[in-house]
Image (tube, rainbow, N blue to C red; front, side, top):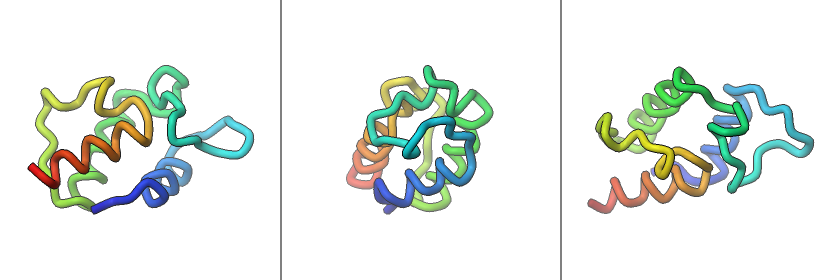
Length: 81
């Protein structure tokens, strides 16, 4: 399963982060413009390959993909389900 540091590193490496000090776990990825709709799909593919989960279209919500913390919580729920 993916952890917070690995996910943060992935986002920092694959998306433009215009923030001093990099990405914080509670930064809003979507409203800040760090990740757009195409980026969400890229992130979903990454999560599915790294965490061996299946993300359903109905699960791609702001609640689940708003921050690094919300993504990690979503992945943890999927893995334990």
